[in-house]
Length: 450
Image (cartoon, rainbow, N blue to C red; front, side, top):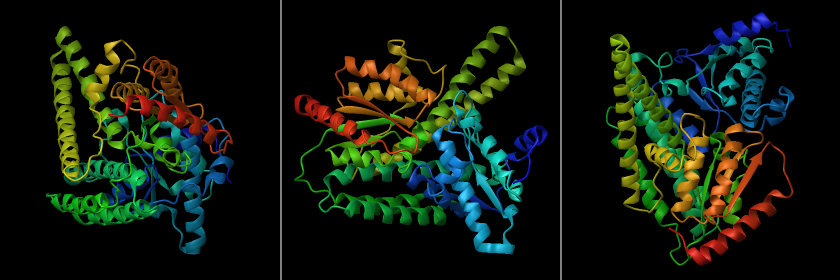
C-alpha cells in the first residue's frame, strides 16, 4: 500500500468522485436490493453501457479490514464488495488488468446521514492500492433527486431516467410478489425459483426495451410473470398476520446484511411487506418540490425577480418529474393488481400529512426517519399486526425512528421491534423475532388484518 497525504486525500475526493461519463467503461453496481440492482444494470446495458452487479457480502472481511468499526454497516459491506471484485479481476486478467476500464457506482445523499460520505471514504481506500486510484467513482445525489447530468449523454437522459425509474418500480413489484406468494405457496421453494427466473427475464427485458420510446414490451413481460406467479398460491392456506417493515434503505433491502429477516418472519407465521425503493426516489423528488416552493414564497416576499424565476422553474421541473413518477408507478401497480392483490406504495405527500397531524416529526429534519415514522403510523392505523424497524447498528435516522415510533405503536397496541445489524450473528435475535411474532399473532386473532 502506498502512503496517502492529507493533500492527496482532498485532491482525490474532489477529482476522483463525481459525475463522469460512463460510456466505454465496465460500470460496477453494488447490490442493495437484489432484484432492483439487476434490473438497473439491464437498463444501463440497454443504453449500450456495459454494466455489472458485483458479487456481494463475500468481501465482508476485506471491508472490515479497511474500516474501524465506527462506520455505518453498509459502508463496510459495499467497500468489501468493490475491493473483492478488483482483487478477483486482477487475478483473472493478470497483466491485462487495467483499472481505467472500470467505473464504480456509489450514489450519495446530503446530511446528516453518513451515506453521503461512503464514496469519499471508498475513494481514499481505493487510492491506497497500486493502480486502483485510476478507478473512477461515479455518483448521483439526493440533493437534485438523482439527476443524471454528466453520467449519461444529454440526448439520452430523459429516456434513461424513465427506464431507470420503471426498473425500480418493477423491482419493487417482484419483491412484493415474492412476499405475497411465498407464505402461501403450494410447494416449498417454488416461489424462490419463480422469482429468480422472473428477475432474469425482466433483466433481459430491460436490456432489450429500455432504449425504446415505447416501454410496452417491459409491461407485457411483467404480465406474463404475474400470471404465472398467481398460480403458485394455495387458496386453502388461511391468511397470516401482516407485518410492515421500515428502516434504513440499504440494510432493510440487502438480504445478506439483514440475514434475510423477512424469511425469518415468514418462518414464524408472517406475511411481511417491506418499504419500497421507489418510495425513497419519490421522496427525494418530493423534497425538491417542497424546497423549491419554500424558496419561491421567500423570493416573492422579497420581490427578487431573478430568484423568483429560478425557483419557479425548479418547482415546475420537479413537480412534473414527481407527477410522471406517480403516474408510472400507478400504471404498473394497476396492471399487476388486475391479476393479484399486492399492497400499493405510500404517497409521500400523504406521509408528510401524517407527521404534521400531531406534530410528530418534520420533513425539515430530513433522512429516512421521515418515511419510517410516518409509514409505521400508517401501518398501525391501517390495522397491520406488527411493525419491524431494520437498520444498521448506530444508524442515527433509525434510532430517531425507534425513539418516536416505538411509543406511538405502544399507544396503538401494535407489536413493534427494532432489529439492528452489524454483521454479527446474535443468538438472541431469532428468539426476539419469535416473541414478536407471538405478539403479532395475538393481535391478528383479536383484530384481524386489513
